[in-house]
Image (tube, rainbow, N blue to C red; front, side, top):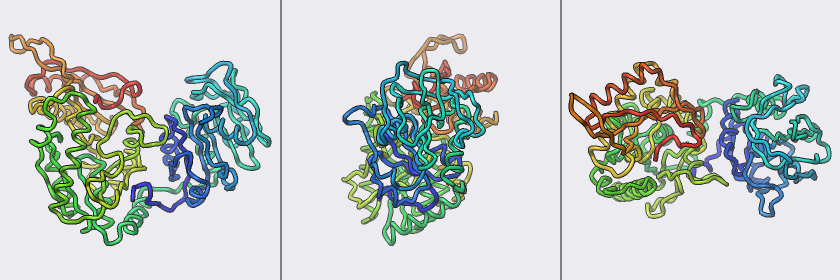
Length: 519
């Protein structure tokens, strides 16, 4: 039972994923409008979609050309389900192609922000600007409309930048309304949901939690569940949700792999023995993980080794606990995307908690109750469930922990440098009142050493980098503009309080091209 198979019955929109880089943003925008969204692979059958009773369907963008012989195509039956369909970029081209229109290479490709002339009399574009900057990313375009369609937007080089069939309620936009660069993009999505699909827009996290708890109870029955706590927000919220759902049937194994943040082990242990009285098994595996990683510098090897050791630890602990039926973990949707778990996605980096159920664990099934939630939704769910805000609003933390915030090989000293510098950064960001404004912030031991002067003596010590970003989806991010005075305090404290650091750097790179983590 994966998290995706726990069906939460409610008003929803189905999004078919054709491998577009912004598919997750479409899902996020729909949820921001208080409508639940299901992301399904493009090859989902019309029967599978009908079973979800969606109020509408959105076809995502994608990197392919509809003219390719092996181009991804959806089940033609979705156009006979009697619900509105919106195609975005590739989704628009596919809709036109499958319904009898024509698609061809554009004379001039459009990438980036382009001024689009919108017919604002159409319900899709009500309240938008007639000349509206929109985010474009296409080489092909619709050159002949299918029967029943009319053009409702154009650019200087794309005569059919949007199309509509108001009888069958089929619509297409060549641009990306889900991207923040598109002015009034959220308004367009909201109009599709309300004016066209008739959504009530009443989805709230409290209702989601209740339905998900009921779904977990139904799926698990009287079985038992083992959850791996990593120390991060995601696994903690997953533990709280499962605890609410099945109580004493849940056992949590919390592994201290030696790469947790300062004070984290005690904080998580206390929450799940007091606030949530869970059966908690705490395992000190610090030496084991450090020995396994000795001399390893490659970031992918680090992640793979840590994932392997987690499996072994859980295998050993589950053997001690006796037979348990299900294995649970706190996978969230951005993890799935970055690990290539979504159709058409490229693998950006491996997540030790993504990739299916490790067969050698011996469990009958996998439970991932957060698999389709974004980070801010996970936090909202945690608050709804009664987790302390001090835990829910902790910084996002990868499963491998500080091990991937040390560039190069690992030693106790290097991990200690990151742990202490990270604690200073978090303390000063909170003191400055910026802890809710900056989405994620942490320090990285760069592996670079440089000459410095401390106490009239020459030093040759490490450079620590500060990584701080703002984002609403963790799929794209901008570097945070931390006030200089705050940066000065952070830098001064790090070089004075953390041994073997004589230089502090600031990472001012967006995502993309960089990822949020350095490794």
